[in-house]
Image 1 (cartoon, protein in one colour):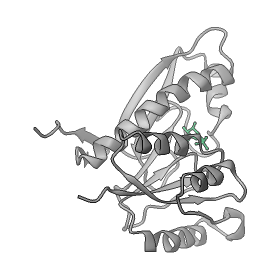
Image 2 (cartoon, helix red, strand yellow):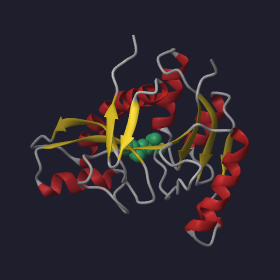
Image 3 (spheres, protein in one colour):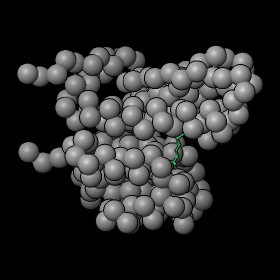
Length: 209
Ligand code: GRF
């Protein structure tokens, strides 16, 4: 059987992409990355893709007058790659699933949605907001993405403590370690056909014998 084909969408350093590449290479993630798309030129994530021998394309968000035209271009660029799942990996623009990818777009957010998420909540800003709010736990969320930032049926969540002397940087580190486990796990479950979307909820089906 052919491996499911992923598109990984990035905007930055691509540490999430690198983690997926590593898991595929060590044989624990049974998928193939067909293409990497970046919304920004010259980011390190593109270099990571090239090093791994993955096709990498840049579609600069700035070159498009609005999010719809940008999404027209993204969808057109994805078309020839016959992708089964779109994986958002630090992608800072809005990817609109449209009909073709409904229920086939995953995102990871470095907090427990529906808190500390949405437009403007990215990178260290998320962790600083968590610390400023004084909450005792944070974590990360893998979810199917819809037309809104950080929104859609939740697949997996994991938690980490927020410590008294945490900075955005130390908290980010703890959350990242969890992200590195949870994203591949969610993609693995999807690849095994074990995720069923029921409205806003995701049912995780038992492993087949
Ligand atoms: C991670 O915090 C992830 O949750 C968020 O983007 C960050 C990683 O960016 N969606 P990158 O993969 O290093 O570019």
